[in-house]
Image (cartoon, rainbow over all chains, first blue to last red; front, side, top):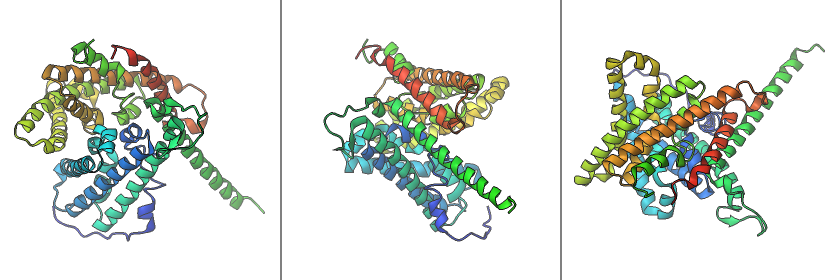
Length: 220
Length: 194
């Protein structure tokens, strides 16, 4: 494969920001749902998972972007997967060494980061086509967006399910925890509720835009 | 029943700890291809088959890795083996049964990114299942995946006709339905004893 220099657009704040809101991997693109639902029964787990995923995203984007002109097109997916798996193994061993408690809470889901489609999606559609700094900025945005989504789910589930936030009790003794929220069905319900909120916001924005357009075209 | 019994392992993977509804594995195809009953059935079949093949492969590879003390390479090996198993299955099906190949269509390559497959390989390793137990576990997990997919497809076909607010159409409604299914499956939790 010959190297063809292409005109690259400069890095804008949007490169970073769109991963957080407009193209949020979980709420807008519906990617990487398995770890999102599985580990968000407490806020701490959500943060740990978010950070681990962000690290893998950054590392794999860096390597893929570095090697983008060396990897033959036919074997690219396999190469990306091996790169991602390497970083996931690093994260797995690091968490095992740093915090056994978090390691036990997350379980096999640390290793399942490999199958997170957010990361492969970034490698395939962004890092393999863009310069290193730009891919890194984009990957960081996506990672922050993913962590944000996990936090949204994790905090709601922990507050309702155990009446605590980050382990601190929020309500008095009379609070009866909604146990279902920390069990699997709660994950589905809370995600559904957040998706409802997001589509409501989107619809409101569209209605507003339509109204403004009408006002412009209206006579007088 | 004893936790090591084959029948218990099967029931456990099939309904008690259903991969989709209790472990949240394989959600992407669960939400993506549960629009119609027949595609859901085909996808379930293909996934079960790949689960079976990769479970056998993962068992052999784990034996090798443990023997040569290379356990840290487990994840990389598993994912590579699953990707090649899917490729192999695709070629074999294409050669021996073109009808089945056409029916499965694009679902075969999609299975590589299904975390239920990798999850199965990892769980059977962590639980230290024997060869026979691994095979039963993979078939149970595949059957459970197919069951969840088909239930969801049936529900969604009905929901197309229901009068729900416009903003809840699509993903949000699917999640609510999945939550209710998951709640129902929790009723099986006592099955088989502890």
